[in-house]
Length: 389
Image (tube, rainbow, N blue to C red; front, side, top):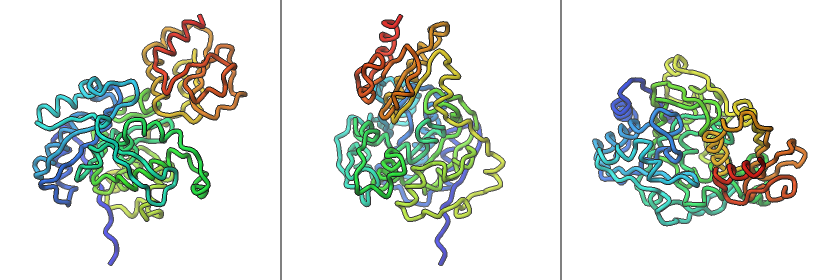
């Protein structure tokens, strides 16, 4: 008997909560009665509903209502990027209000205990630590916002699970050493491989991808909102991410962590033809996204030249937050180069005014003004620029 194709469904509409709940009744076959279910949105940045930065709170509401109707015991949880207070992020996202109105708990995953996992057939990390809130839930629903990402191409349901890692384990994913046992995978970024490793121990039971207002361009935080008014869902997160990429105008092979996850889950040859989805409808809704190209930051902020090595989301967020808050102050100033991450060739340092941001740039000390920290915060950048005059 041929293997059943994974089903992916999509809906559009203006009542985000209702369309999400109705969509899930059309998708979900598993029994959720009596189960503890973590609803994991992407609300770790400071963002408002409809900004494209974070998952829309009304989509989260729709997921919670479906789970309550199905007899489950849902709770909502996420963790924030370094420097962002969870209470503030949850409030601004609208999810705190949703949790209160729906009578469900909202937790900061970083407040859970660290639960260790051994990774089977690891590609980048042999052991990892996950928040106990995620580890102890009976099921997990990943509810990402559909957006582009400077270092991961796109952020969807599998990438969203990185927020379940315990505290600084998230930063460790960006600093993993190469080892001989991982040699077959050395051609891929350690971050992409680590996301695939995480998926092998903490794979969502359901993916609900929020495309109400997506983000294109300089994601994950400086991109442009892209209103699509849709939500898609699947009980197979890989299938959900493949379908979402199709809507975004990407090929599956362009998302390395997804391809690696397919290898680990035994479906390396899967194509869109292997999905149970309405290709004609998805094609009609397809709207190619502007890609997240780091060099475009300098086009948006020409007074700055931002040079990325292998950087983590924490330092990236520091740069993005600084530019968002203070970038316009320096329109008429001499160009300043900001260097972020490991393994930046000294020959890439081009300006007289050069700032080396974070501990990963320490080997370049003496070639610019070094800001210590893992990560530094936007105010550190501001003080350094003021010192430069």
